[in-house]
Length: 519
Image 1: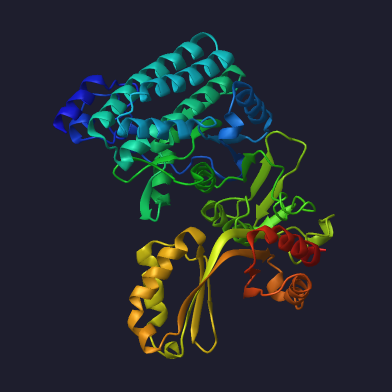
Image 2 (image 1 turned 60 degrees about the horizontal axis):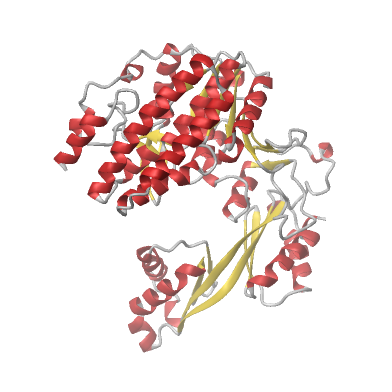
């Protein structure tokens, strides 16, 4: 490994691998490379402008998929009348997957990783040539070339070692965000916007929390943001999404839907007036339009409603994206970058008054969401009743298997516990439970570990449902007229209904629920 580090030490350049961010050994990090660690040492100035003067925009990979789309979002940003704005941007469409593919090829000793890296270079070079000129173009192409040379060295190291650590992979993948944001910031400056660019690994600090998640360190991140703003007074900032640093200044990512999470965190740090998530749909639908032709765009959702719909499979936001903005009552607006006439869906703490709503949909049930390809596991037996620790033992087994429990049901007599897991995990769960409780099954204290596959969960979501008599009765009676064998679980603010029928019947279920529950 020392030889590999020596290889990297001779090829890494100062333009791309900062000491505070390089995921390699201390011998590499100690090189006399360009250092901007000073941003962490400046005194904190509490006079930094925050609050309603800032708006946050987030553009995903589809929004920056081509040169024309990058120009389009630059136009959107330039037309925003907010006094101050931050634009959080993902890598160009498919680039993140291309970067992961580079790592996979190098680990597999597949020499084609070099050609694949050339394709990444060409994609960004041609995009920059279409959008930039003069010094801005020359500067970006110089940076891009240096970055590609560094990536060649890093991938060569992975090729030799046949392995890439998680931090090493995160560092490689993060280049996609660096390039897309640098291009956009140059386009904005070309358009007359006084714009600064920031690598959020210099600001956003997160701690790994297991299960492919991270927890933001808001105190440290806010301190670093204030220090950065002192050195870079800005009214417009383009920031990298998805990437961050650990407390040890090691590069990492925010995992699934990380760019949305980045924007929400930045919204909280700035106490912004609004976070706008730009996507390719007009807003949040009342149900999956692919299953329910009558689905409509919702004008508003509460944070809790959006959270529930996200958990139950609706294409809204990852639930964790909502957490940072909730603490400061910052609204999130979901808008379509390709249809600027659509107002989108506003997610906020208090939904607007029904008197202001034109849609009858904005009543007790806001929408329906589904989780498909689910299996129901039923652990049953008279010997379970009143025995402390039984549920703990059951779910301890599920945890050891690594399966995700989606919903839990328990009979009031305590003689059975049911829960839902993804279909793909149910065989391992059932086998582990039968092994763990083999003696109890043999002695008759447990009667069965039963599995019902091909199961779907239908969730009706609405914050007012819990306080409105008759909503569940209406919903269940409408469904009962069409299907049999429903298993249901009602919770505060939402109802989840499981349908143990074939998956193909499920779109009809959603349609029946949508028609009866919200009209």
